[in-house]
Image (cartoon, rainbow, N blue to C red; front, side):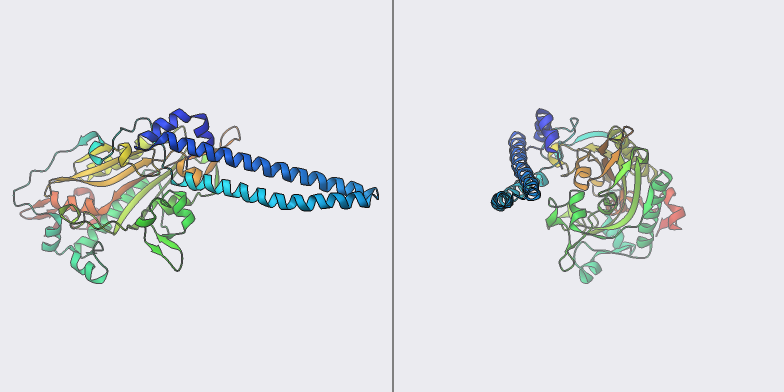
Length: 423
């Protein structure tokens, strides 16, 4: 969540950055500052009235000590009227605070200055492309046909038991999933991340803290009776470990990783772009999260990007790295890099990771702070990345490694799968 004082002190910068999201940034900034002024005035009126009431109370005490009861009684009548006035002033103050908070809760993060302008995914900036496209025969099969041929994934069974977007993984398909999860987790722990096994449901405070609420309310599965949300990513419970926590500067960076199923309600759409594993309501993902010193967060973002890229290179998957434009960024992000692998059979790019720096946006909502070397309390920066999301990784692995003899398993996964071919 943006801070009114920062907007006040850096108004032109914030307007320029928010404009990259194709918003009426000047109007948003003015509304925030107007509501902040109203909040400050209401706070001042309440504080002044409370101070006057305290003064009168002390005066009444002195009058009673001096035996001047009639004067004390007259002053008590004043305090009775003032208490009623203070109730109204307090209501005005709470109302002003709520109006400001409600507006700030709906305003997305201000993009980093390097974020390209643009409104659609087509305007994202290609940073680099790594790896060579595999040579495929004309009769190469998409992953959903390969999954059926080798009995790896049953999409129809998922429809029967739950609904579309909830597939069953079977035999070597299930073992491949488990192998990828363990491979990604081992890579993360070797890189210094502490592994967590986290709850798959969170409360509304947690969803608000990382910015999924209220922005993504309609995309999250909600357990009505218990007022809990199924997590869309492990980022939510992992980052919320440090909600309302004050760290020491020496604690930074905090590095966390975790595997979870992820749950996302998405608008229904049809066609090859969402067939098979291309879009699911439940999918597996290994997440990496860091809490960082503000001076180091963008350096750490580059480290996280290199970590994800290294995983894809070990898997032998060609990929491209995109810097998202302002119109395609997530609500809480200041800068996001997406990784896309090339699906040779589908002849298209598939997103497999988003790696983002949120600056202090999440930390302000979480009240996640640290004490610096001078003892000053400051907001931390937070970052997260998919390392990696499994469905489209599995899709490209199956498609890109198909041969007339079967599907070849990447060498790095063989110790985890226990097999080097799917036949």
